Image 1 (tube, rainbow, N blue to C red):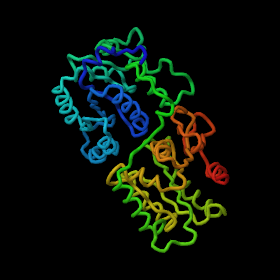
Image 2: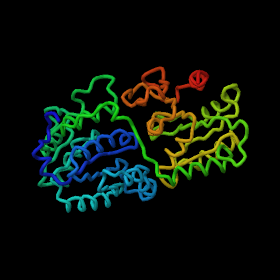
Image 3: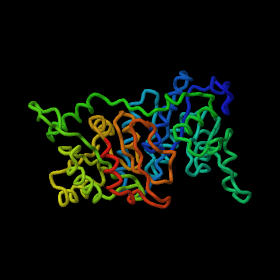
Image 4: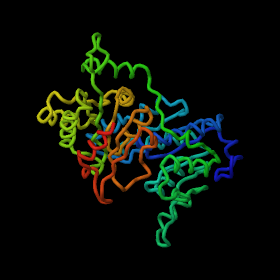
Length: 374
């Protein structure tokens, strides 16, 4: 242990802790290592996690997708998480969740939120009015009265950008937070992404591939071909790859000797399945199978585990590829190099040429040049 912002004495007296974060799957892929390290360092402290939905809305039409957010399935299987707050996607449920959390009378609440940190400092104090409250605090200008007032609600403040140098990977950033807050020192190897896939979902992936005729046939073909999964979807258009490029890539690989006979799967986010089905039926009928983790998050890593290669835009899929130890070609902008896949041996990153370019600027030729060497 090293010096820390939350004292050892405070941690000894604490029987439970609430972490507040606006978690995406990519965030959790690396933060879970930190939660796991905390659980091992302080086994007497129960870990509770508040997942704040930044897309919170009073539009009821959006609730079904927000309610089934895949991260909740993953969290439910994590042995270190004793309680999860996941009903935060509507204003009414958000207020209800605050009331439930206040009943816990948390002795320690920690905001790990870098998006609107003053708001989350206030939320942490609202949930834990009598406890020790720690959170992120970025420097505020002299006229930023509301921010400074919110930051005064923190007993312990951490500048998330402090000691973060250019080129620092996000896994190291998160590990640095836990070292500064709690004195937990971890090794680079312990920050590597991982996912434990329940057996039922591994069997489900195998069954799906057998139905498609890709693997696990009773009388397998002499040359089954490679299995390649393409993920063109991300939360924002800036990080998506056009579906037309996917069709072009499939055609290009079919013409390359090394990739002939390849089976192609396109990963589709559930809300886009209808549109994707119509598009590929028109432009690549019979060449591509569409996949979506409609039932449970673990359907996704289970399918990734079966693949020979994954081509993905900069989203959780490329990090999960590292977690299941499958080679990945990552299509990225220049903007967030801290999010490159961590497994350098199994990862190739293709970056858009200009800083302002979206992922859509990456050409099929750039991808096939990489795949021609595999």
